[in-house]
Length: 322
Image 1 (cartoon, rainbow, N blue to C red):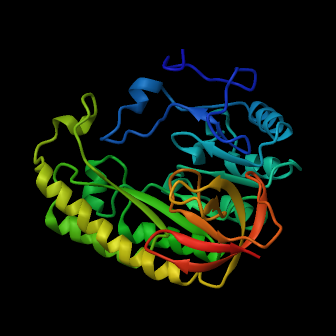
Image 2 (cartoon, helix red, strand yellow; image 1 turned 90 degrees about the horizontal axis):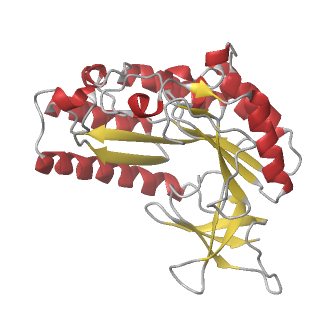
């Protein structure tokens, strides 16, 4: 049923949490109206359809009553929320309502479209302690020529101005993005432009994906395909640049204290615990290991603890409970 192009679940739809009991995702919309050349989501899921405002709030309240402390909003483009029923700045309004739910500690959202990020949205994030200062904005590329072939639009200069606005409004913001390398027609010059952009933007988290043909996507029929070997070379090079940026920016966290959501024992060692700060979205960002616990304290998963960062690596950090 969920694969039907007009499907839209609501707060009454039965669901079983696949996440820990203290954290949950809420899908606020189905479908997508963006014509990205590498994607077939609009064909599979249909046009963008927002869930009713009251439906999302009701589900969040029910989850909060059951013990959920962190809500992560998802959709193909969360920043379009409410547009289909005439709601302006719908995501900002929704975040404000969710932040008012007493039992919730953190509210975040993923998958923001760069040209849909409004000043009202940024002000809302900056003005509410419960809304994580975390922006996930998949840019896909920085070359205007590649972005045009992707049917997305934008450019490095436009994106840098958006990033500057985000950091000016939310000084503590954590920025995550993702890119596709090897899109048909991506020249060496295009790739160098992407590398220069990544160096200048200095993202906190970044994912890089190798282009692959998707039957049904418009890019499938484009010429100037790039060899898989060259695509992999570019992917590794871009991630090498990001590793250096991440190593340097993570060093700035040493000695700082953050609220950390404890998740439980680490798979790396019986001597370590793992948790996440507001800078870490579930499942996709680096690890936060807890190596030191005050004597007599028995940490409980799902609880929040004040932690100090004591050690940093390329992507992961080590902390102690203070």
